[in-house]
Image (cartoon, rainbow over all chains, first blue to last red; front, side):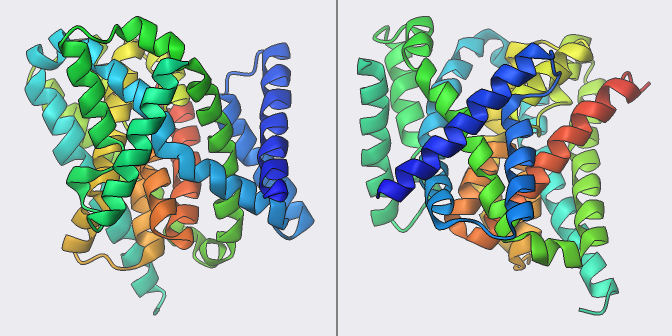
Length: 117
Length: 222
């Protein structure tokens, strides 16, 4: 349990350090994305994922859906736009998204088959 | 504080219901709280601006949680490194397909340019979508709305759609979910399996970064 919190704390400290650094040098990159790259690089350098960090990350990831609720609720503020461009939005959000999903999965599987696996 | 507690309570209750119902999309732990809160807004019981500022700490926690995605990514990097060409081709193909199939019908339907540019960033993570949409003349608030709903649709029905299409490889599913559904999709992939989550985190990062770099260079497409 304590390890889990230590893991969360270390990830949070890394985030805030990078956020401060990003602001100081006016980096045009979201801190969260920079954070994934830096943390992944550190873990690869270590050659393993320390247990407390793994548990901390797993806990954070389990909270993900909760954290997406407020921004999704805010989308309802776009009401008028949704009504006036419903067809374009429906195509983009459903058909186009399914096309993107299918293309990614099929291309990966086709490449794997091509490699004889 | 009260709105954070209400949101968390709704989430915990919905999550319990979701598990009890055998993980059916229609009782997804995000769908139910969002429906209840939007209904409360429509009935005049919830002020969107006040709710937004009351739940601001969640937005910081979300950014911290995104950093945590490095863990499933590294845990599963070995499998993906063996298939580097397949992984990169899949992410590139899926990303281009997603953008073009949204833009072309929108162009044909005479969509205004601001909305068009906001559609182009629909599959990249919210903070990147904001900066990229701004760079190509989109409207950040609209871009964010489209990004979130797209991710939500991927999380809700993406795994089922892929299985219906005969995709059963966990890496293929994860790459597709991360490429099309960024963080929200990736969160769902991690809940389904670590391998799927790792692939999704990698796809989300690569697709987000390359789209954010390439889109401003090639826009406008005509």
